[in-house]
Amino acid sequence: MPHRTVGSAIHLSGQLPYRDGELLGQGVVGRDVELEAAQELARHAALNALAAAVQAVGDLDRVRIVQMLVFVASTPDFGEQSQVANAASELLIEVLGENGRHARTAIGVAGLPLNSPVEIQIICTAV
Amino acid sequence: MPHRTVGSAIHLSGQLPYRDGELLGQGVVGRDVELEAAQELARHAALNALAAAVQAVGDLDRVRIVQMLVFVASTPDFGEQSQVANAASELLIEVLGENGRHARTAIGVAGLPLNSPVEIQIICTAV
Amino acid sequence: MPHRTVGSAIHLSGQLPYRDGELLGQGVVGRDVELEAAQELARHAALNALAAAVQAVGDLDRVRIVQMLVFVASTPDFGEQSQVANAASELLIEVLGENGRHARTAIGVAGLPLNSPVEIQIICTAV
Image 1 (cartoon, chains in turn green, cyan, blue):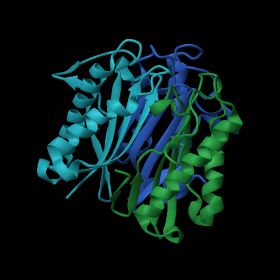
Image 2: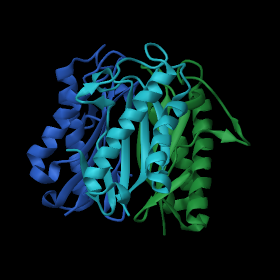
Image 3: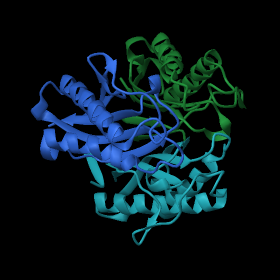
Image 4: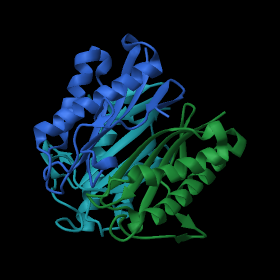
């Protein structure tokens, strides 16, 4: 299911960079995927998380992001997970303003479902 | 400690596929461990999380799962983390019905404690 | 931003082992970094998380740790993520006593921002 609520916290399921039912990229960042492509994928995953948040909250104007975990499939020597995550953070702040600001953790993982280069997990709330 | 509560959210510690004090498998999925074996391990880790949830809530009938993070130790080219996680999700829904449904994120990680192929982290609540 | 609150839960951003603006280590544990060095880095990351918690709560005596996620950049065959995480857990309990006890998940990841060997993400609350 796309989300589940406890108290005022809304937990969204992990989001991949899908558009129109198609995964927009595959592979490992630092090996198959360049930084800029990964940032674009992070933006798409964040957009999907935002859509799930709107569905959960009912109204874009009432969505407030609390926490974002950004998983980047990457090689052991790729250290730019924060730059990938920045693209997602900036999109959320662009769309939601102050309500888009969030605590964040970015990590590099061995791999992701369907060999997606990026996955984003968000906790949000309604204001 | 096995769990900690904030508001109505109960955070359980990450659970490995132990049974009777013995880790049921070791290694990396896609290299040492097959998909079906990983699914079986995911079910066991979910059972242990469920046991921790019952201990926290006091009664199986009152456990509601909110969020599950499924970590699969896997190779960069293994993309079936969702299938591994499905085994855990299905077990929770089998046991708890609607209360077992949850937001979920599945990721592939480099490795896990004691070289376990699977680890599961759950947030639950009492209904 | 360093933290964000929902209900009584305070989500802190992931913390790296910085001291005086300098990252104290780089590399992958089990390849470039020994267990003891990783434990020292975990303690530093936990100290930074504690500092962020104090800033969020306003007073060290009122900080209660709820959950800690410990990410260890490690090789597929390194299975001692729990020992790395123990160093961070012990520091929190040393400083905060019973309020430092927490639910915990330790995982091994492919890599971390700036090639840090360790990253720590904490959820805390005020008592």
